[in-house]
Length: 420
Image (tube, rainbow, N blue to C red):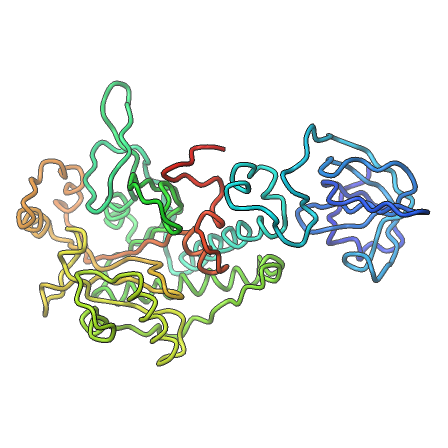
């Protein structure tokens, strides 16, 4: 039985008879000869044929002789082919997938995602996202982190700052997890350094180009930190690792999209929230999208960096578990990482003493009873710790220059979309 090779490997087998398999990407019918372009996960292969050609998007297996041809994809093509049709489409895609551009609006793309994502330009962000996750894991593995997997069904909606999706859990109320925050903090007391890649759910009725109801969160938490700056240093390594993985594992996707990958400075510049307000001329308790854009422009102009840390956000705008700045208690040991004009990552140092949590809840007028399961970890002694979370789809959209986060999301879920 002849083993299948990938289209990208054809040139390595010149003169040999090999088998490829994939989808019919395009048919070109000329007077004396026909060409079949086959698409697989590695790219395109040209097949020279004199017989009938299967329909576009048919799944085929082709056995032929590898012949050099500088005009063919990869510099080689298959001649004297035997074409076996494994499956035929019952209908065509909403647009021709061999076109170099995508002649369809985003709703059409999303409505027909199982087939439209086959277009090389539409699958490219997914390849970049996959490489980013691989780099995230590799970077944190090198730093001694352990990957964990936390529950996505939780008993109480206790995290500040987001609405939750309620579900019926065997007759009891439960919720889809807004983040693994509480669990990853608890696991610092077990493994010291942990990370997770998984879905999170936010029932916030946003209808914008940057928000989703479900997205993939890259979370990390580490113990025995001095303050939030130790967390920022780890985040810098994670982002650097993600970009290096994209360069190595998703180079064709990067080239197809014409993406300019940024350099990560050895030390990402940082600015305190109060100084950021002074620079932008606004005095709001949080940064507006316009401020984020102006600060990013300032970072490029003054530091040559597309990344910028904004530290010291007001405690009033941070979750109750955030550690205050000991020298300025109204401000936090928290931070955001801005990238190309958009807040990309939120993180900071957490409270770690049990009594501090009780005091923080009391100061906000909240009872401690709903947080008993969470506070249990701190009753047994926890080290100073902190962490961060990166939204994968937002990262990928910003990296690829997508105007809408849904262009970098596999089957997005938002205010209006629950299928496919």
